[in-house]
Length: 319
Image (tube, rainbow, N blue to C red; front, side, top):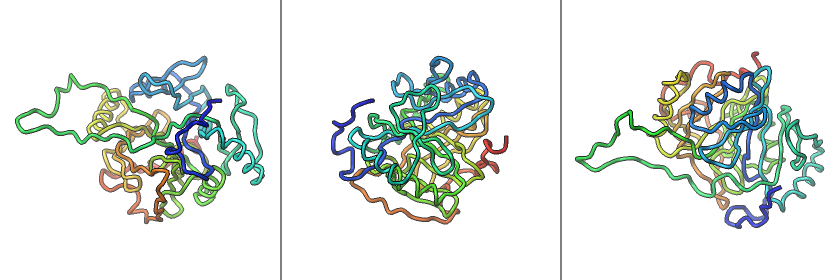
């Protein structure tokens, strides 16, 4: 395990037991070669790891995604990072809540604590370095002075490469139950929600407006993984680099209300999404975010095109 006991106190909220990061997500897909092509075009590095794929940012060392071969696309697990000196307390909490531990899935070591959420989604708690941001991400509002051309020639544009994983959105059969589980068991905090349809949660030790989102569905699954980039211009360039390679389906450009981030979603080959995200609200460890319950028309997007009719369809339950 990674020793994180020396984390500076400014990166944690004193006296609070809670996960500090989404360390990685795992999914199975029916075609690893197709997955490698999609994520590489998106601007990530899809690295072969034995029979599997790891998703990394360009030149990065942190594995944000773990992809395995399967008969169909299926959400595997979510791994959350915790501080080393919270490990015993988390075990105690799980005992108090009568949550059974499980053996790790094939290909994973036994260092983490494994169990399931109420929808049967596999969860890992593991001692990891804090990978959620310690401050709001740098956002560039690009402009130039008068008399200077602001846009380069299209042939000279550099490819867009995300900086890190921003958050993961998953499906749940019961939003209220999911919020209770993730706040009570994992120590996350509700940021905002919209009735029984969707809820957004952040980490108490400092994170963006949401590390995870939960969306109402008829079964578990993954809706999207979101990736932080540095400007609206990069969102547009990312959408273009995907479209010219055949990945034009999606939703954007737009700006969300809850989280405030600018976005463009690109549909993957199996019906879920990768999101380019920029300038999301940041909640430091010292802040108490005023969580609200927002009407659907005030919760999804501030501006942008209407989403696809099947945007919130859980294709893992329709196969």
